[in-house]
Image (cartoon, rainbow, N blue to C red; front, side):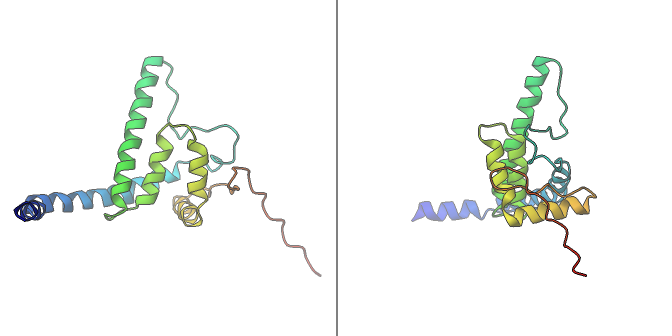
Length: 159
């Protein structure tokens, strides 16, 4: 029983509680400011083009520097992924932060996974609302298999 009491005492230590509170506020502010900025930078046709477009990260000519940029991009994506998972229980935009992280991390099967995540109605509506507020076009519509959705035909005049 003393081990349990020791654990409870450590978890309720004022220093730890202060660190958790400060971390929550920082994650919330980063999520509120960073995720909309990132979401507004996604090209509108990112999911409907056959080839993948870049996300505003220019290609580096030197192979060694390209490797460093790619490693930093993946590290940033990994950090965002951890922060997004934390934001699922702490204040912040957890799902959108996880989506932003997945855009940065390179792994096999990335595009189908992103298409599935973005195709979720709540995520799709939220991303397009953020893009509209930023003055950007909404993401092109697409089917779950990644094929573009044809825009609906205009209504016919019945007169």
